[in-house]
Image (cartoon, rainbow, N blue to C red; front, side, top):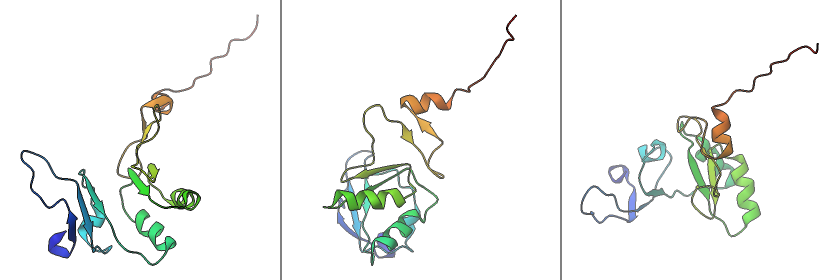
Length: 135
C-alpha cells in the first residue's frame, strides 16, 4: 500500500515475532490494491469519499464481505448506511462482531453461510416431513 501512495498513520513499528501491529492507512483511493484485498490483519483503511452514496457503493465494490463497520455520531444514520451494505456482519460504532450467541455470517467470497448460534446449527439440518395415513 505504501508503494502505491498510502500513508501509514500508525502501526509502522515492526513487532517482534510473527505479528503485525494494528495499522491505520490513510491517503487511500479505491484503485489501490489494499482496497480490494482481504488482509486478515489488524489494518484499518481510511479513504475520503464525497458522500454517503459513494461510501456505500465503494464499500460494496469488493468480492469480499465478511465484515464492515460504520462509525458516526448519529446511530440512526449509521444504521441506514449499514442496511445498504452487503457485508455479512456490520458493526455500528464498534467492530463487526455480533452479540453473544449470534452467528458468524460470511458473505460473498468471505465465507460460507452461518457458523455458530442457532442459525449456524440450522444450516446443517434439513426439515423432512413423513406422514402416515390414519388407520
